[in-house]
Image (cartoon, rainbow, N blue to C red; front, side, top):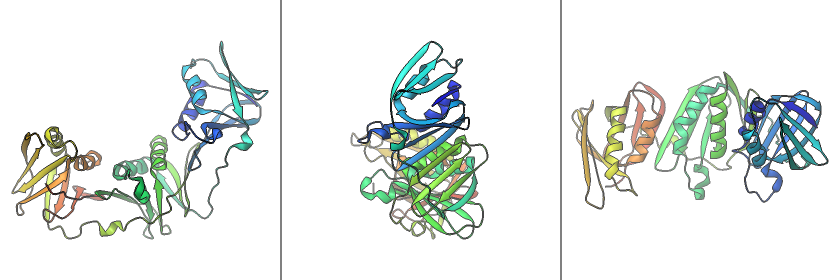
Length: 365
């Protein structure tokens, strides 16, 4: 194995793999990346046995070959090299010889044959979607994923295809739920729970892609092809809660609030909110929303803003962080709050756009 390529090209390829590689793993080779040089391309692969990623970049290959090398050490070295000098890589006597200008390194390797193969599930449902659109959908929902490992099925995001051509992403932690959908093409119905780590990697690939990407959703695996990048992940083998039952259908009252002003008031008020529960009290009155907070030290905050509301007076408590998470991903100038009473969940939407829906459970305060 012997090849030469620009430092920036290989640095970007190796950097793409860093979040996949396990830093301390009981299987040593999983701390390595697989480097396969052939056909004037260098292909770099990383996996933790759950999520795998492969990327490629052009290179001048003098001798074909494959080997694995420490992902962390290789990346740290590349970061410190000059961008003006190409990187020369050569496998000699079981060591990776790296040269760049006057710099020379010798790194230990492990055999490429011992590196786990990333298998691809057949008969997966293929969806072609704009990378920017998918990245926005993930951003709009991923904050609601749970961190509670005892309920594994809530620690990922539901990717759902229906027979009307919609793709739908849903995440919930039991206290709030986020759903975003888009109309694409006619597809077969399927549901898959994608783990958190894979969800965030898919978002990164989608953000960096130019134009369409290919999304394959199967029974046991999700795959993404975005230009020279390929990602594969196992799915969470569980049943996702019936999210449609959670979305309020009969909230008769609705308030339209300026999103930025609402968020600013919440941010100020929460300075004196309980540092553990982050509870805030929202009092909806005719054309006015009063926001109050307090803590165990008897400190208080109160502020009101003008809103478009003509229903009965309703006072309802929430975890302020949950509200701010929703306001942080809504892009429009106004948010619509649909509510029923002080004990029922509320539905939040961007005014004039119901492609994304957010449900937040109230709390007693």
